[in-house]
Image 1 (tube, rainbow, N blue to C red):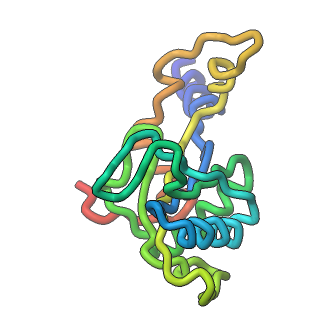
Image 2 (image 1 turned 180 degrees about the vertical axis):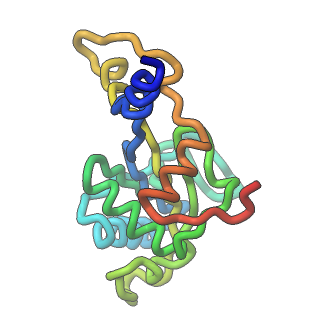
Image 3 (image 1 turned 120 degrees about the horizontal axis):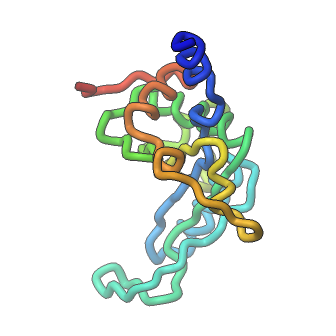
Length: 181
């Protein structure tokens, strides 16, 4: 009887993790031409229309005032997110530092967009880098996030630990860790 419970516990589909969202962010500062180039690049990479990052604070050293456009970003969900994450991790040579992983997410940077498979240099865009954030989630978390008929979900279901993320990206995405202890 105890052996049967161990098998059932290991096969629980609610403990499996997956990619919830992939967010690409390009910071441009106060330069409107860079802003347009960033929007064009994000559209080229994802095929989706990016949103503008709007400043909330005044930063006089960078000539930024509240309400000005300072970047562009896009968030991808579902099966497209997994495909995009695979492409972006390949641009980072499928090697991620251990410091890039926190509970529920993985963040890394790409220095030049020409490292991404299938993207060629565009002289109109110039050379831009980007930040990538991959958020992980377990099945069933929608119960706590939905607006109508919201349910409660325990902390074990909400938090995807660093160790879970490390094993997932190693097995599913083929990523190796640098500086892992």
